[in-house]
Picture: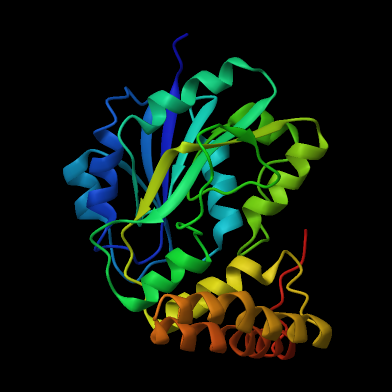
Length: 281
């Protein structure tokens, strides 16, 4: 079966990795209907890269958030299948080709793979990210399964299914994929996770950026973080997180694990006091 597919890359100050990502997508050997970059109010201008790689650029003067950008990209897409690939991720060889056959099932709304650090990324913050967020040391087995949540770091979506449940929520700055996934599953659609498909992160996280990523990863749609949640996060930071770091003799990562719940709680307090906690529209 032949498919028409669009490729969309959300971009926010990822100028150092954007060209690599575009080349990775192009090397998949797929004849895309359109390849577009969505610049979400960056301070770095990707226009020269887009021009040299023959990609379409959509730019916004101020940061509108992940939900808005993915909503707009889905609305704009010229194909029913859309590859979303973050501007810091590379696709494994034949990622798209090996994912497309799942869409022969009409109820399949999304297909994702696992995410790992690229072998070239060696710094300690990224190592922590791989161990605790990407779970790249886990054995996910060889068989594709129906997933219980949606991720969009490197994912093919069925546009008609996404629009059927109301598209991405444009009000969400983060957790927009998980929230959409819940609606897709509730409507009877399937999300497939195939461990044979891999997305490689080429972003070198810093201590601050990996703590921010941890907060977004677990913040949830409503950013709820009670004192009880704080206590459970502290316990989880010691076991299994710090426990795994110490077992790996990685004391720098253990320090990050120790900081995570405190950063998350302080981030919550700041957003609550400043009135910035996101709300479902």
